[in-house]
Length: 75
Length: 182
Length: 231
Image (cartoon, rainbow over all chains, first blue to last red):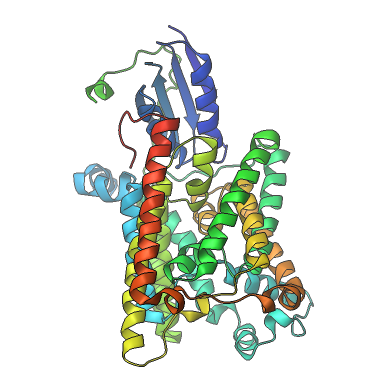
């Protein structure tokens, strides 16, 4: 079970989501992808996409305006 | 004092209204209520981009330019608006209100952060995107709010034609984004 | 999905939690400042004060719901998601009904219908303008309202976009005369009730909106999946 960190700090929509989607395609089931972002849209649309795609998601607010979205590939 | 704010920030009602995001549909309903209220009060729907043309004119005039011979600003109404200045301009107040309303929302959720520019690529994207939006909005008499949202809601065919054109533009923009600006 | 509460296992590369500073006091200060500005404007004219209030409310709602018209058009293409598209359809439907009710009220009382300045000529300029705007909003990462909202959130990139939005608007205004002569003056203004009747126009528009909503729902299910309906 591998862990990957995607640093998307400072990126505008929809870059965090597109990068997350691409990474999730590459990794294996059981792997964890952590998306670091500071965009208010991304902290909503990345988890929403991940859940719709069937994965486990958790969101951590690590600082004012900074989030880590932890996605575990479940399909 | 600090204790008050810390406890406030954890209060369940506070969290529901100020901390957590609203759903998109909640936003849609609230925006609609605001749009309808604005229309009922002022006789006109919400608009955003027309104000930017006025801002441009005021800045231009401040550095010595003159727009009085331009067709766009030739109507008595447009001339009167320019004469009265931005401090008397309702559109200016509503656009500035949007900026500060959003800032207020962010601060109340303790989510404000300055997002600095990371690369030249971002600057190019911002310049190009801004120019295209500004110019395009003048041709279509409005932006995603005035020409699309308000236009369609006003039962004007222009709103729908603009919407389809936006979709085409969004397609082109998406291709450019993935190719050059990712 | 109960799995949401399961803690996903991760290594200790977790970012160390710094004690977060609450920004709520700043929020309160800003609120007071905004009220003062609103009152000051109202002394000049109630109209100005109310537009400031409406703007503030729009900005608040836009930010809280992360409402982004750009995303409503871009996401179906780029990510397959249509939750914002569907929310925009909801907004269009409700606002259409509200506006039409108001307009119809004026109409049957023989009064001038308000808001008709937003029924604008439709033609090549609309299409070219729309394509330019659509391209620009996706590249810049925000539309007109979205740009203002993100300036308020502290995005420097969108501050640049705003500046050049103003510049582009001025250039557009400068060229507007040419567009008017060559295209816009030949383009009709089409107010749907004039062609379909009030009831007909309302019904057709709501049906189209509903149709797009259903299509968007199917689109997302096809492209992404339907683990949990997005909202």
